[in-house]
Amino acid sequence: MSLLIRDLRLAHGKHLVMESLSLEPIEPGAMVAVLGPNGVGKSTLIRALAGMHKATGEARLGDQALLGIAPWRQRARVGYLPQHLPQATSLLAYELLQGACRARGAAGDTDARISAVLSRLGIESLALRRLSELSGGQRQLVGLAQVLVSEPRLLLLDEPTSALDLRWQLRVLQVVRELTHEQGCIALVACHDLNLALRHCDRLLLLAPDGSYRLGTADQVLDADWLRLAYGVEARIERCSAGWPLVLADRAVTG
Ligand SMILES: Nc1ncnc2c1ncn2[C@@H]1O[C@H](COP(=O)(O)OP(=O)(O)OP(=O)(O)O)[C@@H](O)[C@H]1O
Image (cartoon, rainbow, N blue to C red; front, top):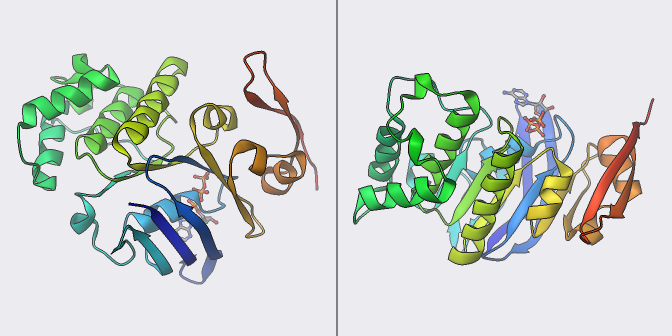
């Protein structure tokens, strides 16, 4: 099931966020980083695709519309991880995941499904801990497990590594990458760490404050001119010794 976005217009009331976004179809198995500066509209885009924010235009996953569909109707095919962490309630992490399975109406062995996700992320030790007793990063990991346990076809992850240390940032993005490739689902991942995105994502969607955007591979999307336009920085893209492109930001452009 490809993801199609055409003439998408995003606004908050009278405040226009994006006039018109049209992308080449995003194919199954793709992990796409959604990049751009603060306030450019990454979360608004992700929320619109998750059915949490009104938008006009067209967005489809396969032959099914995404816009204007209540989030609870989307649960079986769309998994949304918000930017904010799951609430620190007295629920056990395991109970939160059970709730996600029930909400999806998942058939089969719920325990096995939950265990598989916890083990894949490497967080089995958190299963019987209360959310209120977890650190911010641990809650973010449980929030991601809550999304993955529903086995959605479209993963919409809003800064899924914002509270994580270096090792967990890598682990989470590795797992999302493996799942998209193995299961043929699509992941859109909003992210501020360009080098983390370059290392893990197949494609980049870079949004700039003037409403322009680019979707493509690192080589197609990132160059000094676009980094200046999007982020207002002087930066270089260089190859590291392992052959990966790296963004080296030298200074913020003034004025
Ligand atoms: N609830 C809201 N009401 C009005 N305007 C909003 C609201 N939420 C966001 N905005 C505005 O919409 C624009 C896009 O915000 P959004 O949160 O999508 O940006 P973002 O790219 O995700 O930013 P960040 O990287 O800081 O998380 C911003 O100009 C923001 O001020």
